[in-house]
Image 1: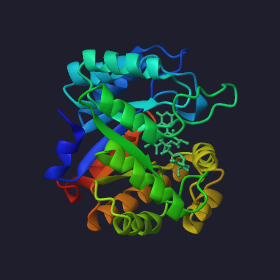
Image 2 (image 1 turned 90 degrees about the horizontal axis):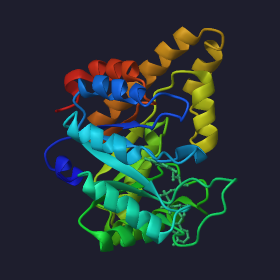
Image 3 (image 1 turned 180 degrees about the horizontal axis):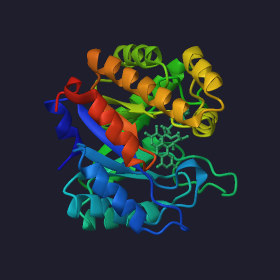
Image 4 (image 1 turned 135 degrees about the vertical axis):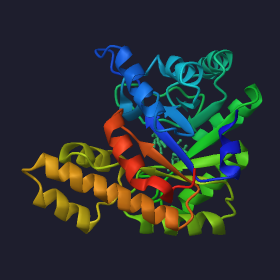
Length: 287
Ligand code: FAD
C-alpha cells in the first residue's frame, strides 16, 4: 500500500522510530514496535543514520518487520548525500524485495567525519532517481522555519516546489514548537503551488537536554512560553516532562482544529510518551 492513499479520507497519524545503536540489542526496538502497534498508527517511519550517526544497516529490516509482523505500513528514510547511485539502487532493491514501497527521500545530514559522495547534491535529485527505479511512493522533508542552510524562506519553498514537482507525493515537517510557524509555512507553500498533504512533525519535550540538543541541531525557534517552562522546572525533571507533554498535546489539538493533514510524532523510541499523547488527543483526531 502507498502512504499517499491514507490521506484521501482522514487526518493521518504516523510515528517515527530510529534503529537502535549498535550497543543496544536489536530486540529492544521490536518490543517498542509491539507497544506502538497498540496505538494503531497509520504508518511508522524508520530513520537512517540521522544526526550524523552510524548508518543504520537495520532500517530495511525494521521496516520489513513493521509490515510483516505488525501489519502496519512502514516508510524507510533514505538519505543520499553520503551514498552513490549504485548504493541507493541496491537499497531500493532490498526495500522492494521486503515489500517496502514508501520512501522518505532525504539529502541527509552532513557528517563532518565523512567526505560526501558526489552522485546526489539535493533530495530532489534522489527523488528523480527513485522515480526511475520503480514504483515507490516518495515522501519529502520540509521546514516550517526554513532549512538552516537556506538563504531565506522563499528560496527554501522554491526548492521545495522543485522537489515536489520531481515526484514527492506528500511532506513531513521538521519539528517546530510554535504552530504559528507551521500556519505561515502552509500559506507560503499554497502560494507557491505546492498542493500535496503536509504532516506536522511534533517532538514532545521530555527533558531539557534532549530539546536543547534538537533545537540546536535543527534550528527550531524556542517559544518564550517553553523557555519559561524549562527555566521553572530546571531542577524538577518529572514536572518538566509533564509540562512538555501537555505542551505537545496543546500543539496537536490546535493543529487538528486548524485542519492539519497529519501528525507525525517523533517518538524517540518511547512508547509511553506516544501512548500518553495519543490517549490525551482521543476523539479529537478523526480515525
Ligand atoms: P533538501 O531538500 O535537498 O534541502 C537541503 C537544502 O538545500 C535546503 O536549504 C534547500 O533549500 C536547498 N536546496 C534544495 N535544492 C536546491 C538547489 N537546486 N539549489 C540550491 N539549494 C537547494 N537525516 C538523516 O540523515 N537521516 C534521516 O533518517 C532523517 N530523517 C529526517 C526526517 C524528517 C521528517 C526531516 C524533516 C529531516 C530528516 N533528516 C534525516 C534530516 C535531513 O536529512 C536534513 O535536514 C538535511 O539537512 C536536509 O535534507 P532534505 O532532504 O530536506 O534536503
